[in-house]
Length: 117
Figure 1: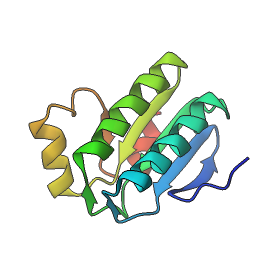
Figure 2: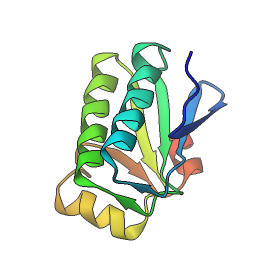
Figure 3: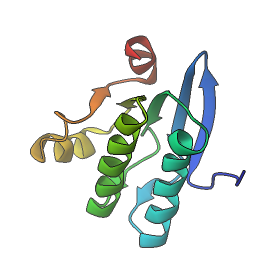
Figure 4: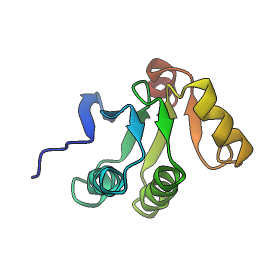
């Protein structure tokens, strides 16, 4: 198993908590690595409950948003559950404008996310 470089993984009960390592997810290579590490969680590792904590993320490019949308599709294909947490207000605004708040379950804190998953 390759060591994740773009994410940090911890486990809380049955839930995999993923924290983004990068403060800015904008570089194409970083986005590809980020996406592959996320996809591996459900496709290779079989994780069924995932909280994606964005507390470290200050900026997310549109390409990174695209990866997240792709990840959400893979999560559903594998009958898994995904909850996003700790999204900064300026990033949340982008989710709201693009109506991604309807696609993703988003909670203010990791604790709130763990409570609903």
